[in-house]
Image 1: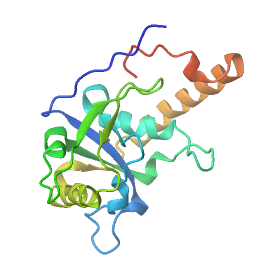
Image 2: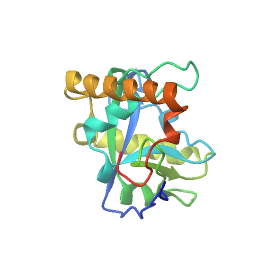
Image 3: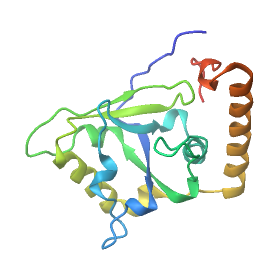
Image 4: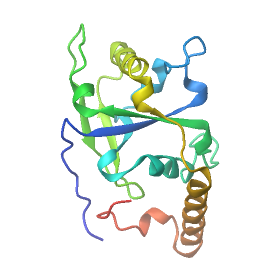
Length: 180
């Protein structure tokens, strides 16, 4: 297997973040809860638009499992938001804190990237929610083409299950150097 190629993400590019419908404010339907931008130790998981279009954001969701219960995620329970990398990296903060967006390809998702910042900085989560609220009509998307997305998801799930039964976990068989 060849090595994974990590690319530099330019400031004029975009990343997608998926947010469950239940993680939007009840008082303001155009504002996601700040917790939707909680950074885990490695960073906030996003998908780089260069390698993943809107439809594939939902395909990736539907072909991945929920860590807590082991069941596949239902892509229809999510919206996708599209954020500008330069805007993320230059958030106006009271307490300056480094923010970076880095390509972090995974065996089953070459577009995977991370927004890296101090996970204890609540201001960053608030500012990201502010961007979504202010630009809601331009950057928030529901799943398009449900039938096409579901068909692609079923194909991937079947392939993954067959690969797992044949040779173990599917990530051991994937070529990490190609776009997913």
